[in-house]
Image 1: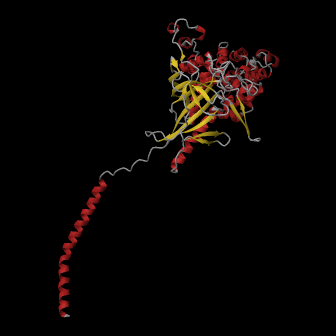
Image 2 (image 1 turned 30 degrees about the horizontal axis):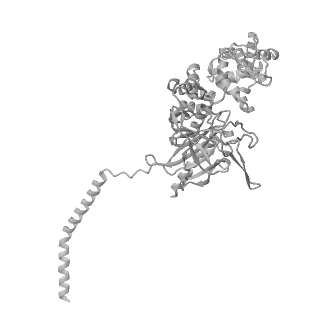
Image 3 (image 1 turned 90 degrees about the vertical axis):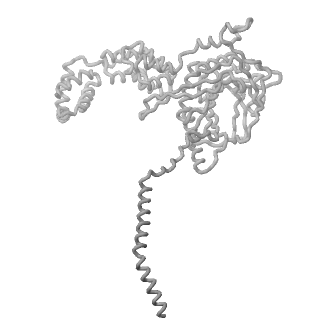
Length: 549
């Protein structure tokens, strides 16, 4: 026991001797750790990886434009909207045995003209093909189209968006045109859900179409809608398509996918047969958001055909496209290659000029295109770009505006206000076109000249305009004289009325004298009320300023 006690005492004594050394070692270790931490903190830290780029939309369009012609693409059947069912069907349209196609020259000229307007290369030799699929409204079981070698390729459509915070800045964009091809339209399937049956109307079968295929250069519904609207204006200016979407003369299929910039395009869906530019924008934007939500949930976008339900505001699935559909394309055996010629010098000898399509002659006949018209209006009349869009977008409004400008000395921006607000406002309210306006350009010009020359005030001019609208054919001068609406010419009378207003409104007068000049407008309004809008505003303002100074 004594031995073990002595050993423990010796061990404790040795430990006490080593304590300072152990403390020094531990202190050094702590210092090294602290200095290492400080050194690490002083070095630049690796930045966390940036979050992946957001998914964005990719949009391409296929547009079917019904060619404005008297007859169909390969038959002599006339074309007319809302004709009785199956009343415009030839033997060829019904695909009866032994019938052969005869190409409509007008349809070829329309396709060439459209291609030139869209800066396309016109193929001097193009081919027709058969595309086989079996729909009840396609009697032959195939469509004659131009799959291998279309009539026009490699074009571009320039269009504009109104950007900026106030949507008053013109943003110029463009989309590439892959090709324009001639093809037949199909008939119509009319579904009767009540009787569970489908009826077929072949009036539309064989009508000539231009299919315009646009590359996926757009990213949202607004861009697609603007591109389609510009194309619609171009076709209408050319006269190659009436472009009435509500009547099916312009139908749009949208190919929509999403991806991260720099990565390959995603799986696309096709939204079919959209017949309104407004619905097109909504359908595309909805489909982009739907696909993004599917991918963010970890799902997979299906390659499918969808339709847009305008009432629900959403796209709905129609059929999947996972299986590759075999259209069994083959050359059309009953049609030779389609030849067009650059000019008459390049035509072979003996060719009937009535049957030839000459590109240079079509190029020379091109009308002024909408983009050129807008630029001309801005530079000629010094109007704002947004006003030029309003004029060009309404059929016949440019001609109306320029006819008015040719007969009045009023400033163009004032005339624009009358045309786009007063005239167009009335037309929209009555759901009428410019050609249906009860006030002719010359009648409006006469009214504006009376205002410009100081015979009537602006408020009276608007009153007279309403009278003219309700009584077509009545002249502005006759209405003014009949209702005694001319400006008050008695200066002393106007001075007397102004003095009366000033005397009866001392608070407003004091406010004006204390620097609140806006109150003067209230006094002017009271004077105009007293004179029933017949006092010259410039004279009234000058008198009131003198009396309140």
